[in-house]
Image (tube, rainbow, N blue to C red; front, side, top):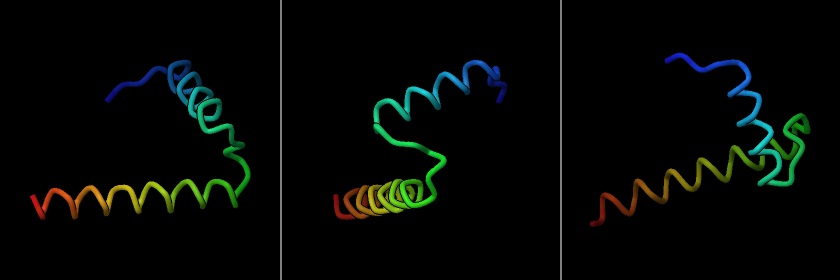
Length: 50
């Protein structure tokens, strides 16, 4: 999949803005990764139960 460099930079900046977070901070980044993992697991569980 082709993604222009400027598009990637723009999207990363938007994510940082929405989350009000510094993605270079390893502690904050870990919290975001854990939250995403929990979100995905809960969605998977809900799909299985339906």
